[in-house]
Length: 209
Length: 259
Image (cartoon, rainbow over all chains, first blue to last red; front, side):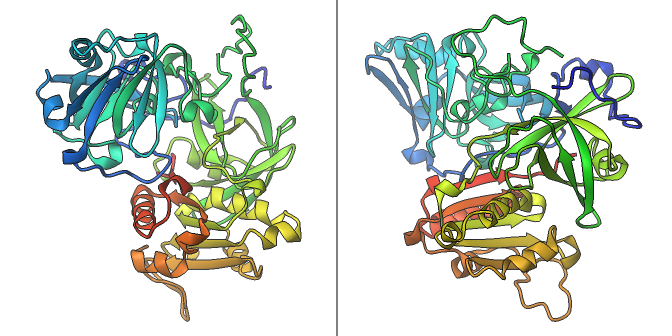
């Protein structure tokens, strides 16, 4: 353990204007592009076969086809996003449906929430979140980025968007949300990454405070 | 910097991956744009091929920058190598490739990552597809395989398909050529922009014909690792799935070079 940081003589770094720097969490740098990261092949599910499910602990479900989902209230979301691989992108603009909206609609089908969720995706990806992190205007099912349909490389047709946490929580190719009574770690959460992933607390890896 | 000691531990809190002081033991010029830093890291716990480290630089006024780099070396206690591609407009890579010399120190933490990983116990066959500096974690896998006992090597055939722009851009060039001397390793290279006289390898970007020609048959259920620029990774992963490989056996790591 290095007690004092080691000074790299002659290293200047690339400083960002204070106004922007204040929006870049510790250990991150500003990226203008939109890098692609994923653990396996990009799935391609046609919209005609795509649906989205909310499933309660007791098995009650609410399910929407693509067209049914599109009929729900859309929101435009502009947020900064932070990838655990160190890049931060400011002012990204998305279109999607709030998870609050889905939960309210699912309640009519008898789908009750629970203290945790697991979001699951085509290709087998999963990620876990406390309910509090996806309700209260903090999470969306996003299907457009920068005014265009979300590209498959970036998670299209739809991805979870939870911009206040590291971006692996914003599951690409999302197909549903399972409510769970207990916390059930997802794909990266059992492969060395932090359970919650708050970029402002630099919760990158398992064991980070 | 917090060290977590102010946080009351909950049940069996896993240990934090600590920052460690590393000192540069050797600098290897791989290409005009890439260098390998071999570092002594006291207390390094060892790693698995495919894992990476976070590197942190601190300026004299306290400003810090972090980047992630794949580990290039086979697992070892107390030392490791990373290979850095220099990005001319990068924040960290020009310092690492141009300014650091033998005996210089820097901070790193790791090993990190539990999925894009190969350990000898996983066995083979191995099919490794690399583009540019995406070779780094795949070379760690081949180096790990090379340290295995002969019987383990024999039961783990490996195929490497490596795409570079030119012969001068081939990272670990001599070692890649020497790999082909192992009867259990097949090496295929493609040079997409220019080729030296007498070149007998591929001369085009990855395509389905190339993958059909060089990849182990899907019935052999190879473990597939693909690392490189997004376009190469997307193309190779999608084509391999279309050729009948199980998506769950295709592991990818996108490697936009990090500045």
